[in-house]
Length: 215
Image (cartoon, rainbow, N blue to C red; front, side):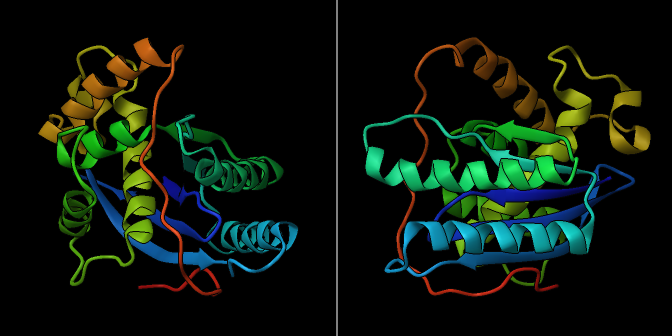
């Protein structure tokens, strides 16, 4: 299974592509960050993000797309750009006829670190370790996109909420501590999704670039 993860953002949009391999492992296919200039018109910035995502989908032909779930919070002006980029990602996936998984920040953190409250440095460190990379993905948006893809790869076997069976985990092995923690976080998130939930702040900055650089 191949998953394309999208960490939505208007100034920086992380894109990561992973392949599932036997033994509860994943292989890095590509990772990049789509950047748009802050002084460009909104419509043009969204078009740039859309074109980059569509190019990535056409190039890497994933089986599914994973996108960070956006929740309302007090900083409405900042979350608006994240929500707009998220909508572009959902539309691109729909046009490609691909299933989409929406994952909360807490679910993603629990999937890769075992803790739904892990910081960005912890997430980056674990993504680097899990994928066996020589260098950590930079900036954090790139690591977050890969973490989303990892979360989605594991979600298929553990999202049911019940005790995972050996046959449900890739490779037939028992789930890792991080996978078990993700399952617990997922069950908790399901209980609160009907209410308000806050997501981590987005950051500004960055220059325009392309998408899909292999590493």
